[in-house]
Image (cartoon, rainbow, N blue to C red; front, side):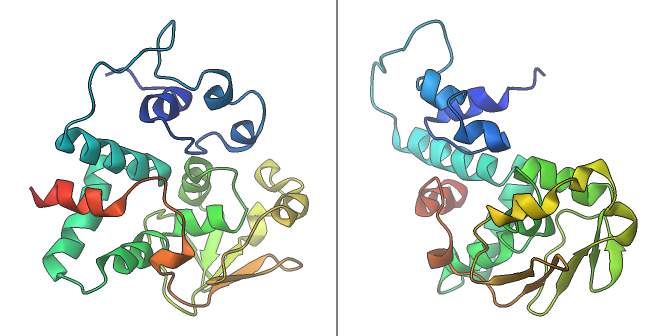
Length: 208
């Protein structure tokens, strides 16, 4: 199976998903240069999407936004559907946003969620003082995240102080910009995040 380029994913879904870090904020972004589906020329859609097609598109947008596989994303949604939570949207946000790789990205320590996942996999972080290499680890209120002492001098963290100055730290996280230690202050709700797709369509899709 041929791996689809990240720029083509955004163009096909018609949404800038910020999958390539700094490039997405520059004039080189494909969604600025070619804001239409992949191909030689802009294509006119012959007919509107079916309800199933619309649900699938919304699902793909959010799944790619979080850099998740179909198996990972489906597990989050179906688990919440089984629990029948009264506020399923906030339950979704609270679970998926507190993944370790997503938190690293939200803190500005990585340019993209894909880079954050790689950094965690390489064991560059401690959680509550212990090394972890599991990107999908769900953190709890009070959990503390820090760059491992042995990783601070690596090229991965070169000029990291300058990078985090540009980061907009979510209200549910805190970051000491001197020590670079972070903490989960509360669980995020759906109001704390801005998704690129319609979450209700995602739950409808998996309810079929």
